[in-house]
Every structure is written in structure tokens, then in C-alpha cells.
Length: 297
Image (tube, rainbow, N blue to C red; front, top):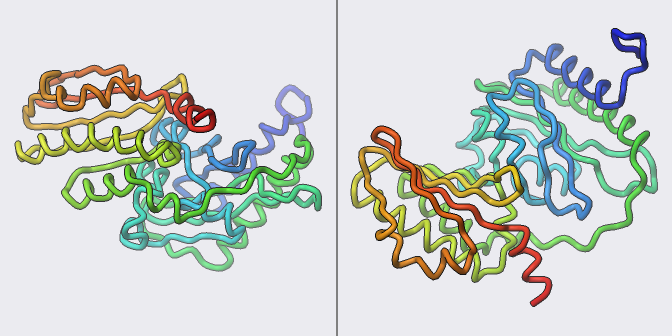
């Protein structure tokens, strides 16, 4: 294939065209491709067509978690028809559905055809913002597209060495931060866990983050204010925590005095922003540094 300049298409251009064709043929709202990192531990959304914003680029998914993580772990298609009802207590594990307001979706693994390439490259996700029951022929069409993507990745990828054993799902389920976020949701607080590296932090660090959020949540609930928290990433790869509350709920630095030690221990940069009747408490956490910290201790 050649481009408008008469030059052969690059692999990136071929992948883009494949996704565009799939989106058109199936009349989809959303098509995205996620790739696993070198350690086969975290998954990042790299390309998306029909995205509402670029927030998908800030999502990091844990292996075995949500749509992308389950597909890569099992190497089987994963279908969600009724989100969020269908996934119940696992909503936080589906950040791409939350960010892109998806109702239904299908994910399939992008598997190498080379025998020496043991692991899948990533996940191809197709989605709809209104309820859609994907047929077997729909799923087969997505699988064929994923197979074509795999051929292109085979052409540009050197087989990697087998990564270290993955952490178990049971360890993730015991994450104190994840459990606290689920409790916040039950209390009516909107929560989005886009940076799931947070659930790999040492338990002490997770408890520190949870303590800060719990103070803010309690303050909002007592004030009968609408509130939400997003744990995403900034441009430098740090975790960006944003807690937004409405209805003139005043948050001051004095309010955060009980968690000063936690903020200091986490090396947080804290700011409080006000706009109209809403207020945002924002702080960054150097997650990469804290993850490295546990390997040296």
C-alpha cells in the first residue's frame, strides 16, 4: 500500500487505516488499541478513534483487571453488553469505559503468529455508547482485524524475553486504596481510577493516599455536596489526583492539617483551585519513584 505521496505506508499508517476500516465497517462509536509494557504488567491505550478526549492516553491498566487486563491474561474475547450493571463491583477496573462513556464493548487480544513470541502484543477494543449486542460475526470481524494488526507488529518487533511472574489477582483485590475507592462509590462519590499503578504501591503508601481522600470525602458528605475523584497521570508520568466538589464546599489547607504527615511522606505537590461554585483539590504523587522504592527496601 502507498500513501498520497506515492511512498509505502508506514506500519503506523497501516494500523491507523485498519482501525478506521473496522470502525466504518461495523458502524462503531469507538475503536482503540492498547499495548502491554515490557514487563507485561501494565497496559496503556496508544491509539483511539472516536475518542471524546485524549484522557485515554493517561490510563494505565493492571494485568488481569478490567477489559484490557482480562483479555491479555486469558487470551479470550471479553464482551460487555451492559456497562456498568454487568461488571457490578469491578467498575473501577474499566477506566476506558468510564472515560469514553461506553455502554457496550468487545475486546480481543492481538496475538503474534510467531511461536517464539509467547505473549500477546495488546488488546483491540471496539465500543458503542448505546447498548449493542455484539453477534458472533461481529466478534469474528474484530478477531480478524486483530490478527492483521499482529502481523504488522510481528514485522517490527523483536521477540522479548519472558517477563517475571505476574502478581496475583488476589493481591490486587486486597489493595486498601481500591477497597476504599469502592466504598466511596457506595457513598455516592464518583471515582475514576485511571492510573492503576496505584494498586501496586506498598500498602503503607496506599493507606496514606486513602487517608487524604477519606478526609476530603467526609468533608463533602457532611456538607451534602456533590463530589468526585479522579486518579490519573500528568505529562511527567506522575499520578495526578483531583478531588472536585460542588455547592460551595470550602476546602482550606487548614482542613488538610490532619493529613500533613501523609502529604509530606508521599512527596505531594498540593494546590487548591476554585472556579464558580466548584473547588478542586489537586496533588501529584511520584508513583514511579514510590514503586522503585519498594524494590530497594
